[in-house]
Image (cartoon, rainbow, N blue to C red; front, side):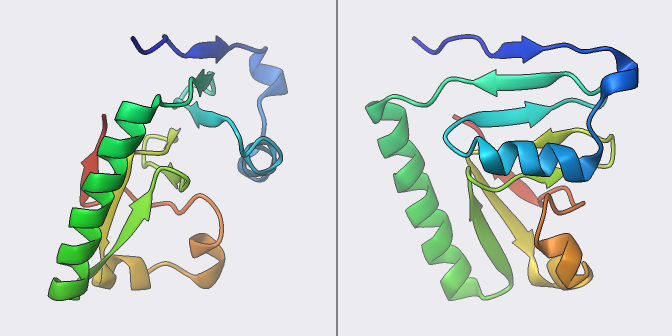
Amino acid sequence: MPLSPVTLQHPSSKQMADEQFFEFCQINQSLRIGRDRTGVISIMSLPGPETGNREVNILGELWSWAEWDGSGLVFSSSVGFKLFSGAECSPDAAWISLVRWQRLTLEQQQCFAPICPDFVVEL
C-alpha cells in the first residue's frame, strides 16, 4: 500500500527560488520531490517492485511508440517539469512533442523545464 507523501511547510518568506529548489532536488536525487504552486514541498515514498515493474513496462511501450512515431520525446519519473501554475512535478512517464520541446531554450531544457507534458502517466 503506497504511503501518503510527507509535506514540508515553511514560512512564505523562506520559500526557495526555482534555482534553489532545483539544487535541493539534485542534492536529494534518491527522493521523489515535488512542489505545489504555493511552495509546499512533497516527498513521496519510492515505488515498490510491482509498481516499478509496471512503470518500466509503460515507459518501454511509450518509448517504442515515440521512436516509431518520431514526433516527440519520452521522459521518466526522474525528470521534473515546472507547470504554468508554478508547481513542479515529476510524472511516472511523460511525452512532449518535439515542436514544443524545441521552443524551449537549452537553459530551460537543463533544469525543471517550464512546460506541461502533452501526455503523462501516473501509477
